[in-house]
Amino acid sequence: MQPKIVFKDVTRRFDLGSQSFVALDRFSLDVADGEFVTVVGPSGCGKSTALNIAAGLLAPSEGEVLVAGKAVEGPGPERGMIFQQYALFPWLTVRQNVEFGLRIKGVSAPERREKANYFINLVGLGDFADALPKTLSGGMKQRCAIARAYAVDPSVLLMDEPFGALDALTRVQLQDQLLDTWRRERRTVMFITHDVDEAVYLANRVIVMAARPGRLKEIIPVDLPYPRTEEIRLSPEFTAIRNRVWHAVYHQQGSSREEN
Amino acid sequence: MSAPAKTAKPLRQDGKGQGADLSSLALNLVGLVAGIAVWWVLTASGAVGLPPPPDVVRKFGDLIANGQLATDIMSSLARVLTGFLLGVLLAVPVGFVMGWYKVARALIEPYLQFFRMIPPLAIIPLAIVTMGIDETPKIFVIFLASFLASVVATYQGVISVDKTMINAARVLGANDLTIFLRVIVPASTPFILVGVRIGLGSAWATLVAAELIAAQTGLGYRMQQAQLYYDLATIFVSLITIGVLGLAMDRLLLAIERRLTVWQERV
Image (cartoon, rainbow over all chains, first blue to last red; front, top):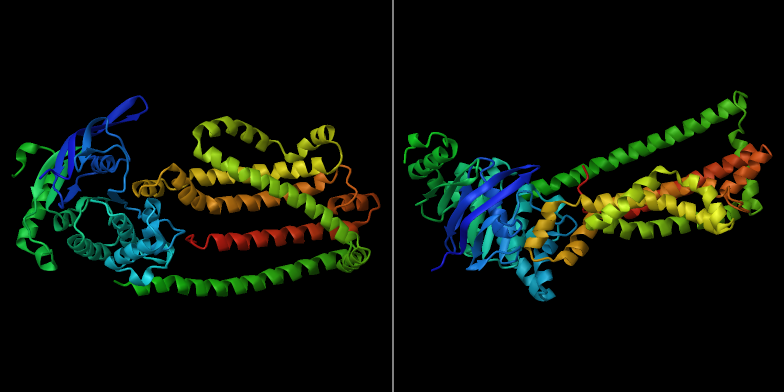
């Protein structure tokens, strides 16, 4: 089976005045259909750059990204994106936010409503369908954004540190909820985070990146069963993988001393 | 999840806000009464050569009775509203075009910044020479004042729309037109409404001077006439009327603004 997302030697340079710096250097990665990969790395490692290129919001300087075998040439509804700052439309209710993409697609009103209801209930916002975003907590806003991304039926979900602005407890709750949603509505997910625990807890594979220039460092498989539970989170196996990822992220100098 | 507890919070804050509104309203009243009292005491003691409150109230009665106040209000209001509406109606599309198209911004901005530096009143001599002395130059000056004030606000509103929100719409499949209509317009509405209010303030501020241009009626004209006869009470009547009308229109716009932007998070 062909991989769902393929990064082929993707390089991205940014010009800063007369200088140009390499944000992402010959990044290559295959993500399988239905896989959940998380990407961790220090700031400046190009993880957001890679995601934005896959979303079509940023063009690569060299190389290309293929999604479902087709080269990415711009944003499209088959690739949903979820932002750290939620990016809900504050003048629309939860339901209207979720219906936004469907309305653009020209979906009829009854069908729109039905689909929106389904995904609003899926993320547990059924009682808040007619609420404005300003009345929601951060966690609820992000759940609304997840429902909005799901509603247009993307085959790929790109998530850019979606839980980064939330408190630790809410973050853990949303991780469980995201995995539950993913189990019921399977999509290929590429999830960026700087939280090592989160990266290991969610993923099939953790992609570790290095900075200056941003590049792929190591791919660490997470051989833990789904559904992931608190028990798994506290297990020695989890801790072992977590330590390995931690080491790969935070001990990037002196690669000869790496324990692998 | 602790959702209900979290949504209950804004409600509580609203309740507290209402209490604060009431007590500040009471303080507003106290300040107003105290101000009139000071005015009365100063004028009654002869410390300043201004008319005391009863004289002004009597003059109000006279001017209402002989219909002069109504005529003046009508002609001033007509000028302010015409100039203001024309100004805002032009400012909103121009502001959008400037915010949306970099080329248009680069072309228009030098003129805008230049004319902003010229007080609209300084245009009056030119307006009289080129437009004559009927209603046109008066309305033009008011128009210019409100246009310049609100075009900048609209343009600022468009360029300060959160880029992430635009990206979110793009990823959901929106094209440029959809992004403009469904994201840029609603997101910049609060800015536009602030601009409209500033524009209204500028329109009133320009009125009296515009009525220097050979007017036959109007609150500003009435004041200039009264000045010739040292009729301070009439000047006070006109000043108070302009202030009250301006304030009433501003509150009306504020109410409309609140209604249209209930979705905004107010900190």
